Length: 207
Ligand code: MP5
Image 1 (cartoon, helix red, strand yellow):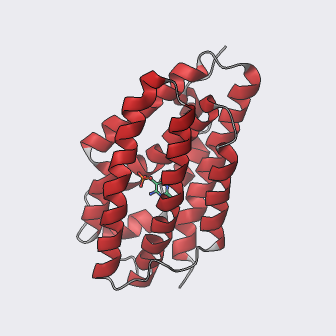
Image 2 (cartoon, rainbow, N blue to C red):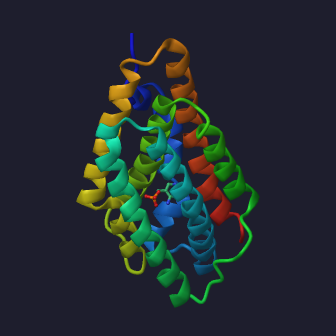
């Protein structure tokens, strides 16, 4: 028996729902999120994405060569995303050299840990991280500006396709992984679900 990404979503649907359906996102959709809450998320997410970039580079270093194309396209998108984050912060006069909050640091530390796990665990983790934002920003439906720009960044069709490709990479390596590694991949999926939920809550908690 091998697990697949789809089965992880089905088996842990409640944990996944908590990661992707959150008052932060529904309040962006209704336009009622408080600007300081949104700014907190923006600054902390920039700090997270810096560490995620390092993580993806480490996943690439472990990947079989036929996975390079997809992972390199992800890294190339991260280059643009980091520039975009800086522009969004500048528009709001935010200081991106702020310190990471504990929740953000915890998530970044978890990425460090997964970077020492087998590639099948890393591929599953990367897929879960990207799916969380793809679904999270898509599910509430059309958002008003300025939030529409953010919803579109992670909810657009090209990003959805990228996440599907990441799922294929993970499924491929999970299909030949032994039970221990599959168990680690399942634990990583649950850990990501929990860290994603906490990340939204962190931004809401400042008011
Ligand atoms: C992502 C993100 C998506 N930006 N922040 C968190 C907390 N989780 C997932 O990653 P990316 O690289 O922005 O698509």
